[in-house]
Image 1 (cartoon, rainbow, N blue to C red):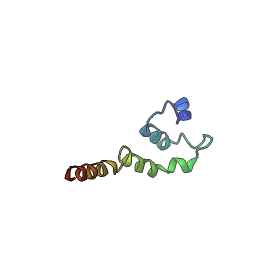
Image 2 (tube, rainbow, N blue to C red; image 1 turned 120 degrees about the vertical axis):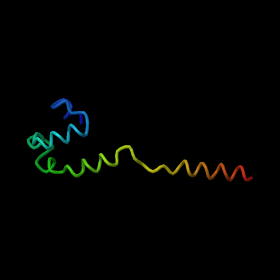
Image 3 (tube, helix red, strand yellow; image 1 turned 45 degrees about the horizontal axis):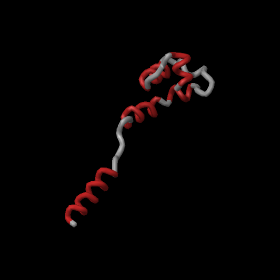
Length: 70
């Protein structure tokens, strides 16, 4: 991501996605036409970013209930 920032001042997923749509990644080392076409991965990332399943709150609640019940 640092390379994309230095080269294009792209610091967000949306900006990188736009670079790919504009065909600006294909000539860069480590990228290519396939990288540009892999916009589906960007969509998956955007949908899942910030989401995760937290199991520890449920476990902590169960321990607390067990402790209170004695």
